[in-house]
Length: 298
Ligand SMILES: Cc1ncc(COP(=O)(O)O)c(C=O)c1O
Image (cartoon, rainbow, N blue to C red; front, side):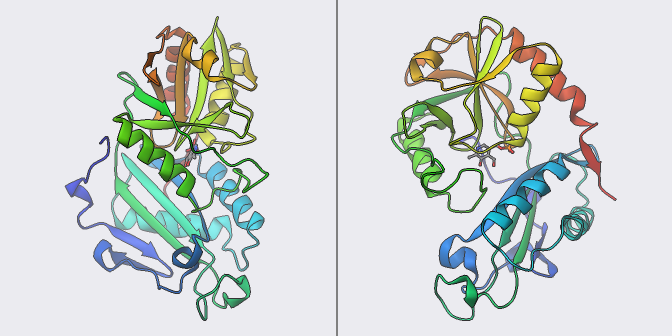
């Protein structure tokens, strides 16, 4: 398993609802919507060198997810930022930190699906932990293709970053059973969509390809990599990508807050070519802009 408990997180303070509490006391009600129906939206963020990376983009996506889910009484991005910075400062966390930020629809007056039972407004949960990126950008990760498909807008729009993660968790279980690091998920037509927790890219003859963000999350890191590539003159094309194309690519890598940019070295038992020049160039560009895209903790 690539993730494990870090003893530095033993005494961290967590923000739940309106207060900062030690992790053992950080709890939500059994009537909270996240318990009742996974009815919540979330963001994973990283802190680098005194700032929160792409905080503006993450908060915009959170607000869009909350609006798509018709949440009411949603705190503004400024209010969330204030609570986030308060939490990081209380924990003295200015680097090497991962933040799991969740906004649930809030507590219900009685159990049930109906959002009209939510009389108290959303619950904000901020979990900051000491955590380096989960994947290694040198050794890379191994994948299997999951039988679980990623949702298209036909079912639940993958552009909502919601807490109903059962599809992705089932895919991850298949990866665990197969003894590899993560699962590649296909869309409804059998084209590659994304991994269970990151987006996917393929390099072929100096060009970069990634699936349309129709059945995958429109990842912040994915968006940045597309921007960086195009600025550097590397053609980046969004298209349907089949498994055969991935198996035969010059290189395949994944992107996301959990691992930044990570090579994929094996898919379904096929060794993937490691022609890394484009990847190395993108990784260097990503490192270069990290500071510039961080919103300082104040
Ligand atoms: C399913 C899925 N895909 C991709 C990503 C990567 O997105 P980002 O680059 O915004 O971290 C995430 C991150 O939470 C995710 O959950």
